[in-house]
Image (tube, rainbow, N blue to C red; front, top):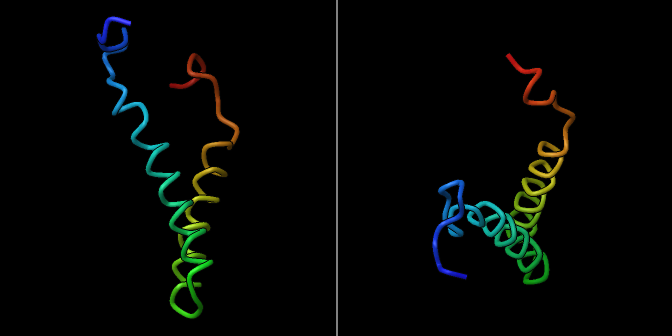
Length: 69
């Protein structure tokens, strides 16, 4: 490895920023579910629900790029 940016011009930090944020949100939701009750449960449900909605949104069927207008 030469340490250069990929051909697309995106650095590793830009490529992995969203997956890292999703992982952190998932971990925060799991930890808050284990820590306590009441407000912690709300935090847990919000974090894990947002993570689930994000995964469902990214898995939705889409048209191929060449068929989009």
